[in-house]
Image (cartoon, rainbow, N blue to C red; front, side, top):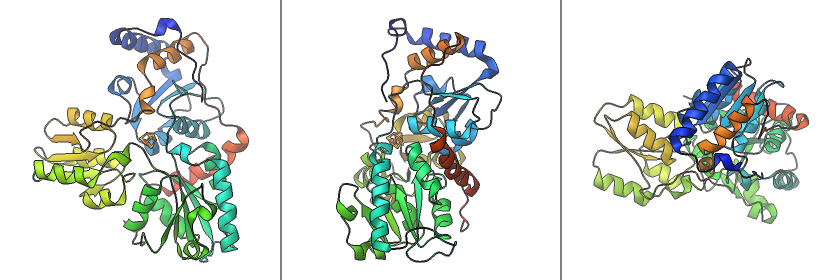
Length: 379
Ligand code: SF4
């Protein structure tokens, strides 16, 4: 989305002035305002957040303040869309910088997914989820929360669910209880890692769907044999982590525990000791005894903050070249300040509003995600 340049008076302010004016604006807005901050945001933003969390936690937090007029979402576009879908009509959701998108979410669009659905249907013959009987050719769509609202709506309309990295396994198990196959988009790695954790063979029982090729680059035989159809999308941040980095961490820090996000490639997840969502990473490190050493494969702002807050442990990012999420980084404090001071003046800027016909089905898919929760029936 297009973001107009900030008014000149907001450019060139020093950090202390920006922070003080944000505090002043928050004080004036009081309970009318809730600020949500994703873990990957920089410290100068997190300092002002009422809640911090991953996509799953913030989706729940967004709906927990019906008294607030404004939800300011310091994250990326699809998160603000989800917050708008899950909050009452009278609440206004604001993304401080409209250019804060997600490159992974952009790897699947509505046209491509509808086309894939049609093509898969032509091969399988019976794509729709029918009477609840999980026949081998029925397909359940599952979208990662990192996707546009119209893809969540597509999933809602076709009986499927949204998932996050916190509940991907529970969501995929939920889907397999209702269909013989799962179409998982847009992140191939989260889908593959989740399937492998459930005992599904990544070579024989998964197929990669390339939206730029007929039949996604597959043969009809491959599509029929696959249990999980994985969309060819990825996160540019988590793709940077490698097995070589893990080997180096183990060489230089004997006894290190390596924990990575499941958006990393399968080989990286296999080479690590643990994998999990950002909330799972936070919990594992926070619960660990003092003196332990952790190499973490996820966004660097979270890792650095964790290292600061858990100073009795040695915590470092697996990628020494530093890997912030470039789009999350677009939420500069000056953008937050501008959005808040406009609210103080009674003006709303950068509202994220999902059209109701899209929101209706997307809400169904998001509600299924929240009902499924995080616990796998097999846990
Ligand atoms: S870290 Fe990756 S998946 Fe998350 S918002 Fe950034 S690009 Fe998207």
